Length: 393
Ligand SMILES: Cc1ncc(COP(=O)(O)O)c(C=O)c1O
Image 1 (cartoon, rainbow, N blue to C red):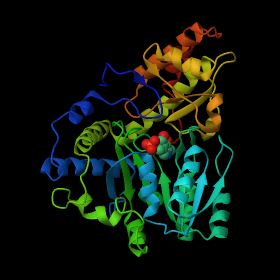
Image 2: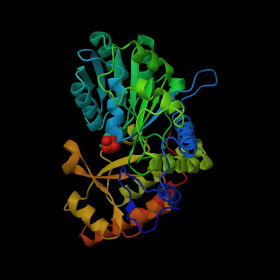
Image 3: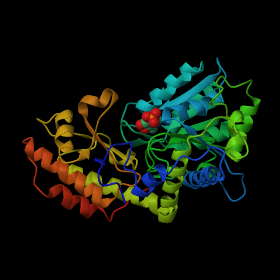
Image 4: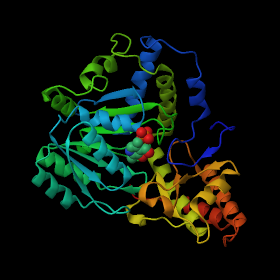
């Protein structure tokens, strides 16, 4: 169950945190080298490995790094271990967070080349292949779902191309891990980066990376990592046995809370969880459309965790957000160059059908108060009708 005193967070992160996770967070602080912390970290790592499909039956498990920080730190950690200053990095960008990855690349001194598309679209795999060949980059990044637009990339195709060309691929799955499958091992993705506060249903505070053994080998061949704190080799022993090997203090309360969130996800089952996210996406979009909030991108390219929509004529995005907040529901504004166009909804993590019902009802009531032409009850009716449908993964 979610904490009841908080506003309902239907934003693309942070997402609602179940009461059980909050209670774990509030327990007295453990030592970073205690056995309680070590076993919580291990369970959290196992959960993340399952969530990303990190281990095939034959292959080795990835190293799961859990650091104090946000998704942006995870992005940085993902490439600073693989690209030396002056070396090429190809960034595949289909939105704001691709642009951010390019900025992170430049900040660590990489020679960044960007292959991009208009917001709301996907970068065709052929374009990625051509850019990899012409740039001769040995490392590339791509975003799974760009949270600014809700668009999902054809990252499986990118991964196949990268694998074929011997390129190391880092996937920004900050907006999806725990809500959509990534199948890291099957797709031979080298590094998956994420954060605690989105589809994993944990509070903000953890930067999380699943690093394949192949990527670790690439790190070992790099002539030094230009970050001390983010160096995988500094963390390797601690992440394998936090009770026995100190590198730096790990965020123990958050790790114990993270374990509780992973327990909840494992009880639900990862496949069931992914299916719930697909159902939420489909039904939320039907409900929102019925009250005049149309997704800004085509259905065919939308992922399952976020929806960016326009607003009805005569209503501004900020007025709508403020009006919806009066009923205890938080929705987000659109961001980046889409900021003037509308609002964004997160439907991930612990969010479920009752939350969406409350959210769509609140938006509908807010629109009516703002004088927009809405048919009362239409959004909720469509939402319920859409609940049985599924989106392809
Ligand atoms: C796809 C994606 N990548 C990276 C980030 C950055 O994460 P953070 O805000 O936790 O630094 C976000 C945040 O929304 C995101 O959605």
